[in-house]
Length: 521
Ligand SMILES: Nc1nc2c(c(=O)[nH]1)N[C@H]1C(S)=C(S)[C@@H](COP(=O)(O)O)O[C@H]1N2
Ligand SMILES: [Mo]
Image (cartoon, rainbow, N blue to C red; front, side, top):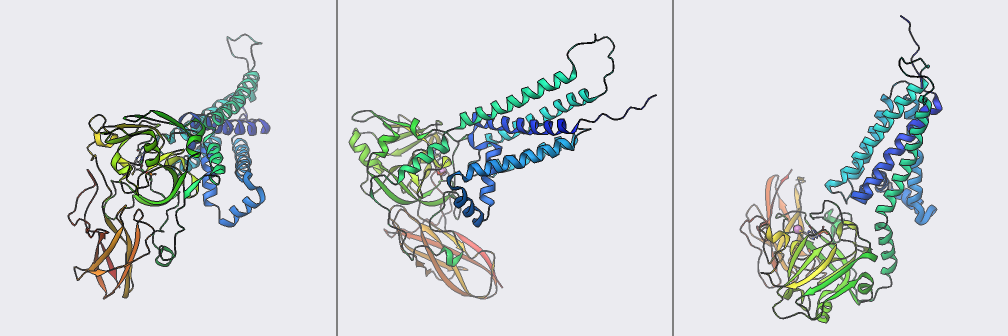
């Protein structure tokens, strides 16, 4: 028996294998993301997480040093880190592929994690990172095997005529193909996903030039006690705004490609392009949107300032036929909602086709480029995101998505209050009880609170922005040590108090007086 020295891949080649494999992983991930869901590119997702986790001074430095190219600079920096990791992985795998495979899997898991924590995450988004890791591992194993074979001392293989294509040629050919393939895949991904962020940037640049005929008043002092109390702020950031939709893949439509067809029981059918919307007078309004699935005390409710075209004016101009009971809207991905025409046509309702949210173009997950907002109606009957079609029709002619699934036809948001404080255990003495209350569009007139079933106490109400937004309330109680239950109820502007009977969200919204148990020590 002869012992042969184990085959070792030369250093430069080993490093190259690492780089090619990681390149293939990134390229494949980017291509599949472009096909399935642009936001799911693991490479871009990691960059987004890096931005989110960066301390504010670093972000400020990057902005001042690189301006609007701070993102490309970050992505280039990540590329350098990846190349270094890839070279190290290759060098650590000169005999067996294990270290390289582990490195690729670890990078892949990081990419997957970054994709899943993104605000735009939807289930299909795991496809791109999964394909990315699979491609990286497959390429690495294949090239590694070829490289080992090429590095092994040539020994005659019985039965093969000498002088055929050498192992070295196979290795060089495969490597070149992988390198080119990775570049082509990456470029393909960029071309396919291209556009949404670019389109949002173009819309952003035009926001300042809009003809906003009515501005939302700046949030006056006395509205927001969040800083003082440590509770939910009055305005919800786009990042924290609740998100509910059926989209497996966020529709990626550029503003330039958007159009809305208004048809059915109208005077004259018309199709609007994004530019047609921007040319119209706009209104700005702060609105609290709520989901019908929100449980009593739940968090599927948020507040933002929207800018959009008043739907009432647009429809009045288009002409609405008598008997057109509902505005049946369809999104780019086929979701539908039916909104009572009569509500949208109310003078003070301010229903709109919104294009901006908190000073930015709509985020992709909140309906870019255009969505509907109708203050006072639950989202499932009014807040169509990625809207592309609007048909004026009767309720019997068309059934919307959630109506077909057993939810209500008419769904005004119910008057409700929520308790945000106290939470858990609090020190004995004066205990602050605080929360939010809403009754769109008329507003809240009173919130009452009691502890352990005692007498109702009227809470202090924060300044009202408008009836279409929630309103903070607070009060205090002197409480002894022990466990306590606090309960509250809101009353609307007409003197109607929120319904006490507990009901589930199905079919038209939960009811009940919220209660919280906490401990005083
Ligand atoms: N295209 C589309 N629009 C939609 C939905 C949807 O599933 N698809 N869900 C609706 C529901 S149920 C709610 S509560 C609101 C939520 O809007 P948000 O995700 O911006 O908070 O959007 C509405 N618009
Ligand atoms: Mo909803």
